Length: 174
Image (cartoon, rainbow, N blue to C red; front, side):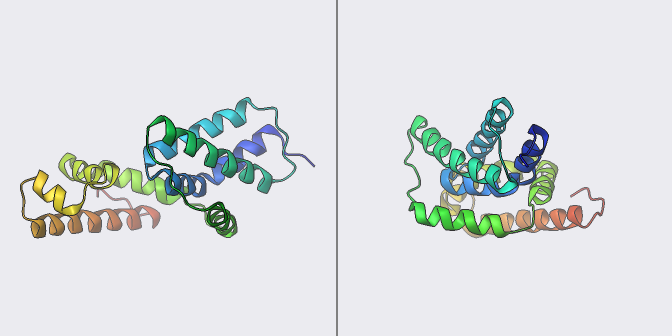
């Protein structure tokens, strides 16, 4: 029996974490991965495509996402991540076998990132979004590298504690 539109959308929403992880692996940019995911959702909503099984929805989204990631990187003038298609297929298959949905973890992480002070958030953005190395970040902030590493370690610990608390159901101010 074919899935109706609501069931199809629920499948893509329930596999959000897995799709975002795959898109991030291909783009190395969480913002770009999120944009592609949103575009996939929009395409699915506008589409008249009929899917016979939940796994077919996920496969469609994985392949469409892979092509969209390559197109997005070309538009940005960046080199596409050249993982062999067999490797991407293995990652997709492994991801499909993983029963856990990571949406809760991502939401907890977003919450905890928003709880950080602006300086800590900025440091994380420079380090990961802008891919500035630890040594270059220390130079940028005019700080000794060792001092920066201690600060980053404290930020990571605070984030980890906050995420664990959120997932454990505890209220936290992080």
